[in-house]
Image (cartoon, rainbow, N blue to C red; front, side):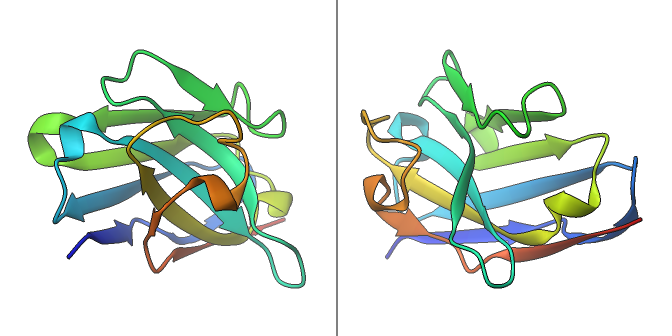
Length: 125
């Protein structure tokens, strides 16, 4: 059974940083593409970042480009999201996702098969 467990969320002031982690089990992590999405209250889930199986390709939403970095450690079955220069608009529940491939519609929730339960990130102004 595939499990994705996010951690690292919390409350931070605007301009601060957080690093999210997503530990995967029940799949061959090193051959899976991984992604991060987020969902703010009253809004749809939106794409944040994605990374290919070997870390060679990364993708970002325009809203986080230059501030967030996605990276992975295949030896630890973990993908990370380093978030810098956080803004109140970044407040959301952040979800980890997995799929065997980076598909054409990687920026949509439907393109991902496995999901974690989410971790709350709150940014105060």
